[in-house]
Length: 110
Image (cartoon, rainbow, N blue to C red):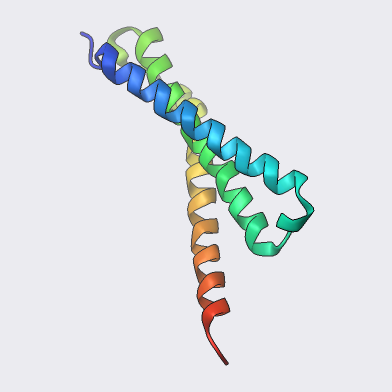
């Protein structure tokens, strides 16, 4: 059975591709520009890197849907395929919390 229709597969390829291009641009500009070397900007660049890793999970989903018969795979293979996207999601979420705390502290007067 075809669980994901072709329009959904196209959607799950196009949107992550746009995200990867944007996040890669943020990482590239953060690395190349000397004026963006503040701690907050470095954290934002690292968040973009983590989100890029997270977006790889969409490609894994579409690829596994088209490659694996009956849409069932061994649990250890599933873990191996999803470890980088999951780490990227956790990495970027933690850093986003740190940036939010940093910006909150930066706006306070002590």
